[in-house]
Image 1 (cartoon, rainbow, N blue to C red):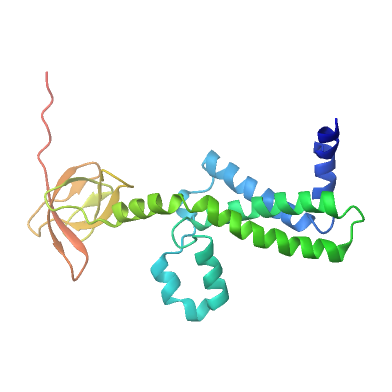
Image 2: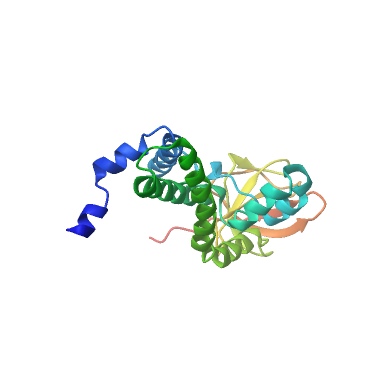
Length: 223
């Protein structure tokens, strides 16, 4: 009975969540929930996710400042997608802030609530670091797989409306990671081919970043 009395009910948690000093973090958590619901429903593209690479973080440290850059590194934002990091951080801060205010701020002191918010932020950073740390090796391998250049001789599919000697894009599947979308061209004497045509990668021009491909003959249907 004592343990049950110490555990806040849903009604008590909601009352804490909408108190003036907890309301901002509650609103942020609500926005996070809406974002992930829209993502699951397909209303938000995965390409809309904001990512910060370690190289960008090091290169722009003079622009964002030492303290923000150090905080981003502390929560693995250079390796784990920023939306995931912010989701975990906001959730942890909300939980810590609600519980600490429930148990230690029954008088609803704004000054005490401010100290609790600072504590929630510090422990939220620590919790986010611990939770995202196991994801770092996986995200590194995934990023390396996505950055790996397609091997000459691989087969891809035309994804642009058509592919010719002037314009075109080809998608090449990878064993690990997302498919690669390449800027590709046919030889000058080649006839344009439509979307969905299979092509073979012949060579790569490092100067232009364009792949030279040739169309593969269609596979005859088996009667």
